[in-house]
Length: 224
Image 1 (cartoon, one colour):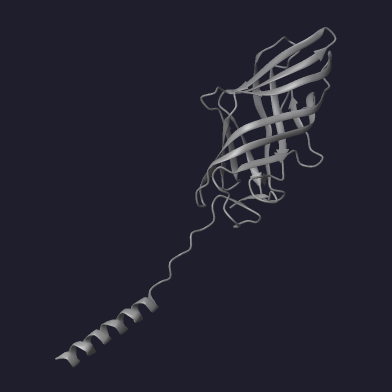
Image 2 (image 1 turned 90 degrees about the vertical axis):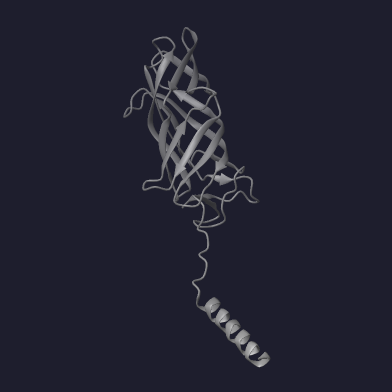
C-alpha cells in the first residue's frame, strides 16, 4: 500500500510539472501612453514634470485670423506640466499644465508699438494626451477658471490690455518625430479690451522636444 501511494504521488507531481510546462506564459504589460527615452521605453511616472520650449526656429503666434499673419509673434515660449495619469496604451494620459510663458514678442498691428506682456491666466489647466489615430490633445479649463490670456500692448496712445478666452478649451496634436506638441490656429475670442485689440486671437505654437525633467538627463517623451 505504501508503494502504491508513493507511485501515485509521483504521477501527480509529474502531471503538475507537465501542466506548468505547457501553460501559456503570462503576457507582459504593455507600455504606458507616455514613455521616455524611446517609444515603448520606460513609463513616465505619475508626478513627473514635463517641460518644453518652442521647436528650434519656431514662433508662438496670436494672429487676428486663422490664415493671416497680422498680430503678435513670440520667439520664446515654454511650458511645464505635471503628469497626473498615465495608463497602459491604448488610452489617454492626463497632465496638469502649471506654467506657460511667452517672451521676445513683436506686433505688426496698426497703432501698436510693442508687446509689454502676455500672461496665461487661471492656471492650472488639464491637458489630455491620447494615442488614438492622429494623437489628439485637448487643453481644458479647471475649477480655477476658463482658458484665458491677457495681452498688454504698447500703443501710440499708451498701454492697452486685451483679454482673450477659450471657455471650452483648445485642441492640438502630438508627434513622435521631434517629440512635439502643437496647436494650430486655436480661436480665443476677445472678452475685454479696446477696438485696437482684434476680436479673436488665433493661437498657434509647436513645442518640442518634450522632456521628462524628473528623470536624470531629461529624456525625450514619446506617445505609444
